[in-house]
Length: 516
Image 1 (cartoon, rainbow, N blue to C red):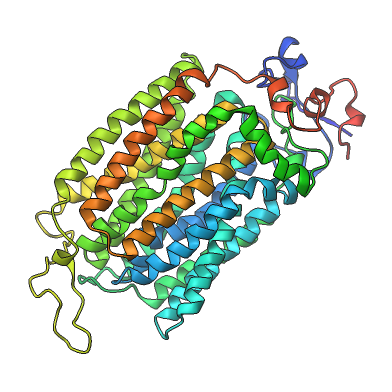
Image 2: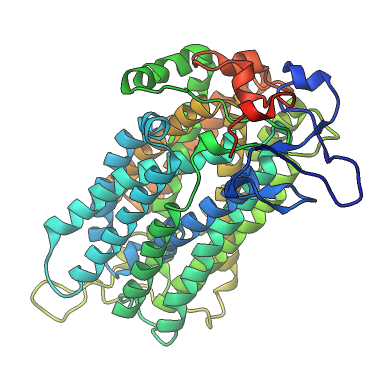
């Protein structure tokens, strides 16, 4: 039986019209909320329209999965070198990671559409556990093969996890709330990195050299990552989601591997201009290598690296909340908001990376604290002393690293919002996000490889600044010409086997709509 949701003593709950302006329900005025029977649709909060299979509840759940898996991974990686004093092993593992990530991320939409978000996310979470286990094992024995395997496996897992996450984040909400959904997700996800950074900070608070984190740090991360993989199994798949306006997510009713691989081409055919966003995708993880290894790991002691990581991810939360809510200000048309966001990125790129240019005045040799092989003699006896938070010169670099974190959230929020503005279709969104994560990871693989081959810090910095500006120039035509104030339902249904009746619940035939 369908469930009609009414607030006690009031008329039926009025919801906004469906997000597709061309849909039949869009012309019928406010709709009473009607849900199928079953525990997934038992209303938990009437005022905010929350039930288990609602977009809000599922977004929080996937955010908690990312809190426990990639959030903890980011906390560990944010210390530079995977928590180790020598970043070479982490560089090689991350090169393997992002190489496989690039392939499975690019095709991730196909797997998500076929397997569903629940299995995809859970499998993705397992890879984070194995990656961290391999780092712990490397502290006690040489396990180079296992390390590279763990990195490559995590690339596969992360490619699938992030594609599933992105699909939820940009296809479940209404057009008018996609910025807020990103803000909520990014805040919860990065809270994982903030709390995760407290683990190495607490366990290494007295370590004022450029050493490696303790075993307990790795074990803590492993336990939390495993919990995230288990939590993912409790998610709903996209076909079960019902929005507060009585609409469902546009999918393929009968997906096959053939239709999903064909869908990759159809996505590009539908909106070829999305190719101009590919440089933004490429850059979106490019700067992590420089920030984590060339700045945090190179210039700070262990406890200060942990503090910097905490501040970096706290800045991500602040940036995501501010920009996410700003992108949903209904006072301004969506096309106007898109142009303002683009202008903001140009200004932030010049201001923040301009400050980074002033700071980047040291070389790899200047910060080399390694020993000559077979001796206890330092390679560079005059190496710069690692900066500690108690040092008088710490405040400036601290704020720079904070703003690097803020910039990351601004860039990621913008990219996700731009993709979400191009389509509301769950199927097409999965492919957009797959392209995003695949190309993003290909760029990251190149950068981690260059760092493992000891590319100069100055060259790494310049590559970031130049590529970011070029990416913005390439994206400008898409933002100016292809982001409209709404996306029509007819456009979203192209390339699927669904009709308008499949995604708009029939209020007059409740028994036909997924009853108990």
